[in-house]
Length: 296
Image (tube, rainbow, N blue to C red):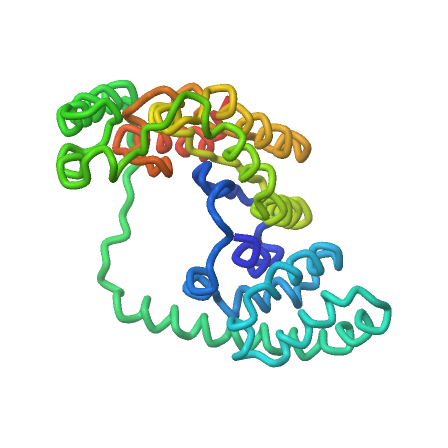
């Protein structure tokens, strides 16, 4: 996310941006080399490291994290050398980085030119696509009631809101491991407090601030029924919400965490809190309000 946003540059100023994630982003193990590489963009990485709009502090912190995934840097010796110097944190290395900076800017220009050309090719080949849009008023309560009723029918063979077919296919052992109440609290809190993703999230928030964006921080709720069944108490679950709120509040950004739906078995479809049809309608309602400056 940090790389994607940084590469956009000054067009972010004054723009609304939604940063969306699930709570397990902060409790799962760090991204593997393979998964990080699968989402890596040289255009975006170089856009961050050679950005003229970001402070050296942000670029050094980002470089430290990017250096943990060296295989993604092999295709660009220039980017690799810049990151090596940014992570050394000495005057001499800073000087080398600044000497590289014009060449990094040239790389960024060429990357963007190639990207624009590829996008132009796609658009020019699809000129006949319908582009008309028609505004309409949505009856959110009716939409929520309708999708909730359908969700209940699809999940009526278990108490966790899991799709009937998935429950029958996997059984409870493939969905949630039942453990004594509170037995996993300390392990959960330790993973939460030690997650590197909090530092990554701060980089994202700092980039948004320096770029002058207008973000909404949008978290999904913890899947309370599954967490509780898995030995993580409500008290331990609240640690996530408190930690997230404290960090976002320090930037004075709006936050929607859907904490009030923690105990709702129909908001999520699984332990990682991936969103159900019910949850998506509720998320869409928030996005609509944010877009129209009606978020309270």
